Length: 123
Image (cartoon, rainbow, N blue to C red; front, side):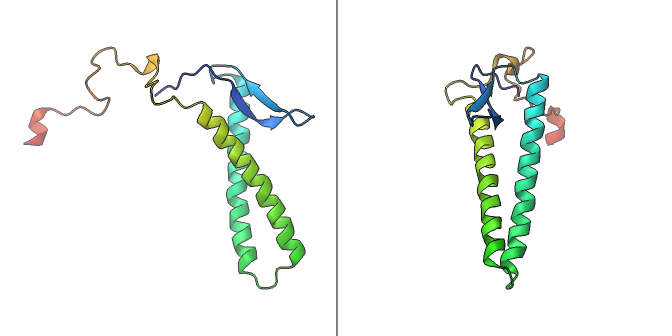
């Protein structure tokens, strides 16, 4: 399924002044792939951080400074994850938009797009 949209993509980085950056493209260019890779790294780091924090919370010897640092890191990871979710959410088609023109089946639009089996296969 190809998602077609005319809205700009919120990128996973900001300007030096802290303003959001956007990309207007079909989603297949170099900069879109760079953004995809950065989002993937951010999500992976957030998952690793969750594991680390779980270990830290189970450690009865964790100090207040360690917990405060972990909370600061979790706050940044949550901010990154929310930005990714917001960016991806704005690129999803709305309920009235349906599939894009690239998703239409030219041969048989009623085939459901799934595997085809002969009637004999069902006994």
